[in-house]
Amino acid sequence: MLRACRRSPGWSQTSPGSRRRRRRCALPRSRLWLWAGQAAILLGIAALVAAIAATTARNLDRLGIQHGFDFLFQPAGFDLGTTLLPFTSTSPVYMAFLAGIANTLVLTVLAIALSTLIALVVALLCMSGDRLLGAIGWSYVEIFRNIPALLQIFVCYFVVLRALPAATDSLDLGGWMAINNRGIFLPAIGVGGGGALVEALGLAAAVAGAAIVLRHRARRWLVLLGVAAAALWALRWGTVTAPTLGRFGYESRWEISPELCALVLGLAVYNASYIAEIIRSGINAVPRGQWEAARALGFTPAQTLRRIVFPQALRVILPPMANAYLNVLKASSLGAAVAYPEVVSVMVGTTNNIVGRPIEIMALTLVTYLLISLLVAFIMHRIDRRVGRSAAL
Image (cartoon, rainbow, N blue to C red):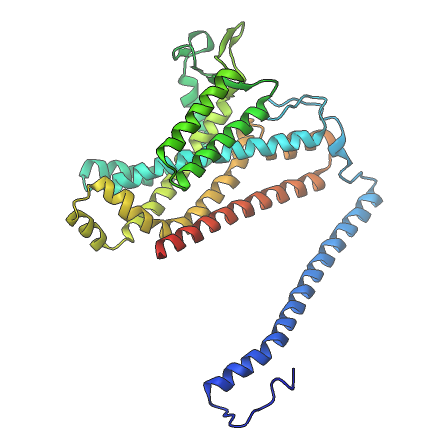
């Protein structure tokens, strides 16, 4: 390395070439120190965590308190009212933990989708230019973002859903869907020999396939072929079961409980007031000349928004939108207030009362939310990078 960096004839201390050569010579050593420093920091953090864990274990042993994660393999001893995974009272505790995570993800995805849709409508109302529509949009933003999310969930659960008809007077929509104060009963799409998890995975695969088709702008014949294949599969192997009226009301394998409805509606209404401002600011960030150029080319307002404004506004919208989505995920822990079996209610509430391992349960719950939050942030970062690259082309 020293021989490669030796001064050559005609070397000048101020020449650009010499400065570049010196930077190249110093780069490997600087990287080595950087990696060494990062490794030292990681080792220090690991040692600190190990010391805290060892000290906690010694103190618990001294007090005669059981500790460890062996409780995850014990029978749970309780049932869950809402779950996508097969779970009974004899299932191990880790299955209850996984069922709580699945319920948290379902609540988060539904709340994010509904809040984004409401926010888009509210943002367009605020920018409509009409006094009445603008007043409606601004009133929504100012009212709902200044009321606590928990209070809005309580209003949805104890006021809005209680106004629905009783189970004996359900709203029957063509025999395929029923709505009452016990929830929303949907037709179940079944797979031969499969359970709710298989059905949920099939639905997720269908959504992913549709996203791929839209992403690659497939030809119309490919979309029609996919629809025909899905119809053939449904006729040959699939079954569609409508909700049935039992002794105590409607019954269906695909049921949206009142707790889930209240949480989705409450979180969506609350967070939509913040997301609407994010969307409005992103649209306002697009130069006015883009609107005028689109109008000069004969674009309608809807075409201007869809083809010109939104692709440019996404670069401004996506970074704060990721923060709003993370807030929706963390606010899903409010499900414990209305007895929805999400991960906090299942682990910190029910499981902790039965097994009495607060430290381990808190650690599992914290790590779960941390990992899911990092996953959401990573996905939004990748989408942001992709949108930024496509906009730069």
